[in-house]
Length: 206
Image (cartoon, rainbow, N blue to C red; front, side):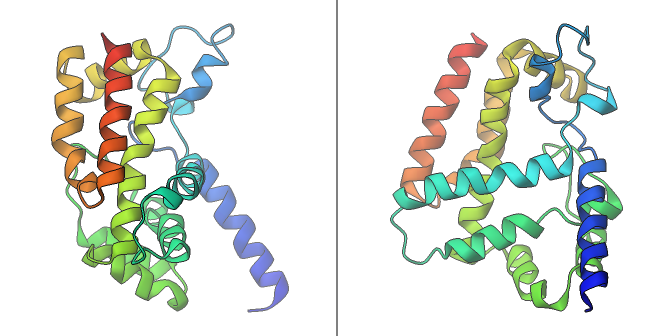
């Protein structure tokens, strides 16, 4: 690939990642915009997290947690690469609420079509969901929203879950635990840390 073509490709991807808004996400910036943007509306397109915001927050968590998991089977480089590409299909088929979605072949086809062949093996690992590096990456992907829920505020989180999931405050934690705990059980440190994060969130929720 020529330098100009590579340059144009990167600009196009960054613009697209910045434009695509995810379905049901934590609008952290709402806290910064309260004086000029009231009230919060869960369906408002502009307050939803962009795909690039989601993807870029994951390496921060991964590189911070990795030194403590004590699992030599996990390759941090592989995990970071997978985190960088794992949601690329959203550029073409958009996002669905994770608690209710079912992964489809459309996602896989869209990802493979968009990714350079260099990354196909990484994406196949993502689909198989068996490699230690991907298991670590998946736990990072699932624990990240817990921090964002805490940071954006309990009132906004309650509104989001009521609007998109039709559940009340007392049902939020059971839903999170039932859907996410299995991804944390692959490593004891991550499991215990996840439980601690959930306790912190539950304290705020109450």
